[in-house]
Image: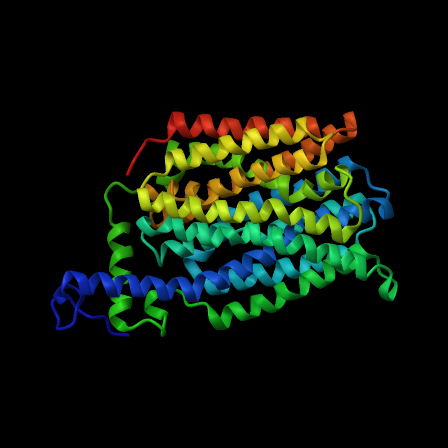
Length: 441
């Protein structure tokens, strides 16, 4: 494909500033409309297949005679496999492309999720959860990296926010859907309701992985729905940013950069809250006295609706002001307060649900702004490796938080201690952001 050369008639340099700005905005509008809904859909499937074990738990533990500690370890061990294969997967994406990598990931996690119907023992449970983590490894950082091929940093917090609404939308959709499946399918063809949950929610992922190969373009120059001039504008925006001398571009730079490790520590604290609301919201809501799988699913959607709105608004406002640091720190502070209040108010269903909603607002609002921090100083291979490293280390909190909550629940009979533990991690995130992330516009 030919690229419009500098100085040629109709080239970006020859356009009036107003017309160039209009074409630039139109190009990014097209990209947003074409890519973001599809990527959101993919991650909704990933998130549902990752956390539906939280709803399966409502019946699976009784059927299989698993303890709360067994569940907590199984829910969290997903992130060990995720951690081990995250960086290799993202480096492979940079080498072979997004289409092949994201298709492979999506198909394999769908198959692994469906295989959960065969679980009979704790070891089988642990093994399949680990395998699910291995197969899904690289999807989220892969998409974060993929978006850097299409959007410069100034537009990225809003775009990250739109993509990361998938966390929240999955909570809004996944809860009622899981509740409905478990209410309607119990005993059908000899399978338990939780077995049907894994089968029905795994099949769409396999089909979506096939769709990736047909729908997803690699980079702007491959997007036939952009004009040649729009391709040139976007490509030059992104390439100019990648050449920024203030950015690190090699894998060695990423691993040697103290800011990468600080971001990983911050993300660990942020993810601990996300794993908590993902894996334990159904149990928390059941403990508040809500009965019936469908009712639990519907009520569990409430915090995620509020979190979705907060996530989008925080990303938009951060882009508009150019400020990242306090947008992230204030969100994690709200998360810490909300989780603390949830543990303190478990005796009151209404107040605890309000507190859990506040916690979800803070947790989810932190994500899009956080991911604008590492991309401000990483590019190229450093971005691929650094983003994956941050995400893999951060997601170890997905192992720690569910396990600790399960341990507190088994040891004390209460969820409050685990919620206070996660609240402390969110507070640590606030301190780390304020202390170590430089204010920068």
